[in-house]
Structures are given as structure tokens and as C-alpha cells.
Image (cartoon, rainbow, N blue to C red; front, side, top):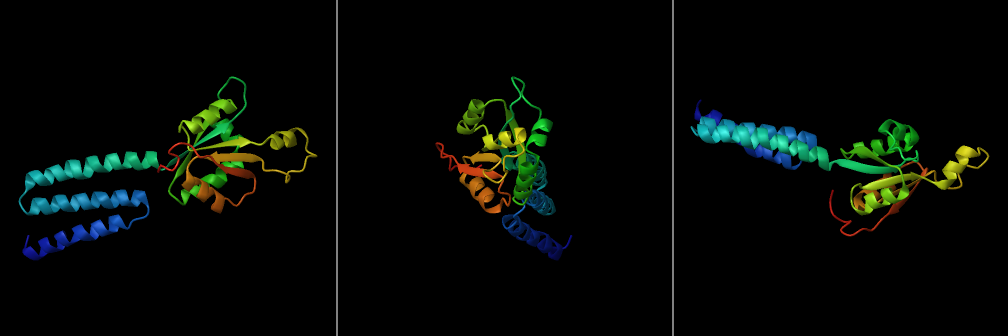
Length: 201
């Protein structure tokens, strides 16, 4: 390989690094990080540092990408605690999906734009749900309002008097996203100030 080819390959390193820094989508950033590691390994191999190239390929590329993928997957998840009254039996996620269907669709649409997924965590009583929020097991909670249950029993009750759901979150960023982007008026949103609630998730 001649010297000009080496310069071209080396020039790919700062280019890939800049693309990585300015990439908004974390999954695209993982791909670019893999390309960056592969180019670095190639440069080391061309310059005669085969041992360093092998280390970069195994640790700097394969292992790092795997760990980053796990971190991104877990950190970009909104854990939403929901209350589903079904006696002593913990409801299945399918039952919860049906119970909160329209609101869940709206939340998934909103957070998909921020590359986040919504994971439902069902609870059977209000105390367990509140404790989960305060102990940081979930990022937010969602329950049906009392009027919603009354509407279900008596169709003559007007639907527009109060929200059908009550959503509470302990993360300020999530509160801001839901408050500004949720188009439906079917939920009343509350911010819960817990110890260290301003931490990033």
C-alpha cells in the first residue's frame, strides 16, 4: 500500500470521530463507533502494529460496541408503572395494554421521536405503585381517574369533566416532554419531586 492510500485511511479517523460526536440517533452512533474502531484497527495493521490492531478490533470495536448497545438499550427505556385492579393477581402486559391502549399509543409515539421505548410495569395496588415511583423502580406512573371508572359504570357521566388518567413522573425531562408533546387531554400530568429526582436517566 502506498503512502497516499495510508493518508486517505488515516483521514477517515477524524471524519468518523466528528460524525460520531454530532450523531443524534444513539443507534446510528453505535454503527459509526464500530466503523471508527475498524478504521483504527486497519491503520494499526497497515503501520505494522498487528498486536495493537488485534486489540483494537477485539476490545475497541467488538466488546465496546456490545457494551454500548446494552447501555443504550437499558438507558433509553421509560419504565411506566401502571395500576390494574385485578384482585391479588398481577395483570399481564397484554391486559394492561388493552386497559391503557390509547394513552400508551400516544406515549410511544412521543418517545419514539426521542429514541426511547416505553416499558409497562403493572402493579396491583396504589401503595405499591407509589412506592415504586419513590424508590425509583419506575420513572413514571399512570392510573385511571375515579371519574373514568364512574363513566364505565354510568355512560351518562360526561367524559370531558376531568381527565381519564393521572400520570406522575419524578424526572423533570420526561415531564417537560409529555407536557409539551402530548396532544390528548385525557391525562392529568403531575411532577413528583423525589430525592435526587433531577438525576439523568
